[in-house]
Length: 253
Image 1 (cartoon, one colour):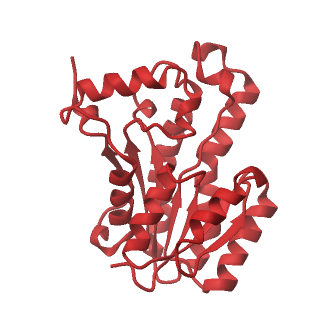
Image 2 (image 1 turned 60 degrees about the horizontal axis):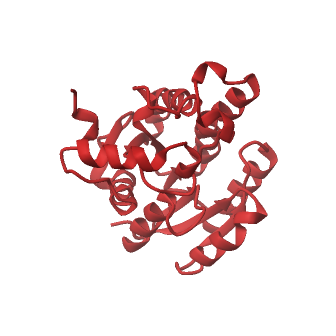
């Protein structure tokens, strides 16, 4: 399904990352993929995982440093000559901003969360689009906290709201080039980044109890949805936020 397709994956930290589940699902369908890592602390993990896939590439990229972003896309262009899809699964806010009350968010925490978690989608879409000469698909990762208040999610909820709005505006801008942009709103998953949110364990239990399927979603399920969105099976879908949360978002009282 993805034979002769080239993807670029942002956000792999370890084998439990949503980004890795997405990459694995795409690799099963024949895609070649490039991976980025933000710091040397993560480099070894990313290189070990990427080495299990054929013809992969690993490059450093810190979205707060435009030079590294430009170099990462240059490396993809040199190796593959094109790009067919991009999966954006990066977010960050200072730990102290992910507990207590949102009203105490500092200016610096707000700026950091919005720049890394939301603006970076526009940043990488701009860099990717010239390489998507035959059209393409960009997928980002959101969460229910973008539209409803989730305790302790705080500034990240605001950042995800900006991310979902960015998805729609980017879809409108890039559609003329046959580039689609969509978001996946995944249910809570016990990943490395999710553990930064206070009381994540309680949240997982609550969602599993209240969702129609009476369980939490898995990273593999999110990965399969991403694979669908980067494939031609979803050729008529753009600007959407797709919920993959065992139905939790439909529930009221």
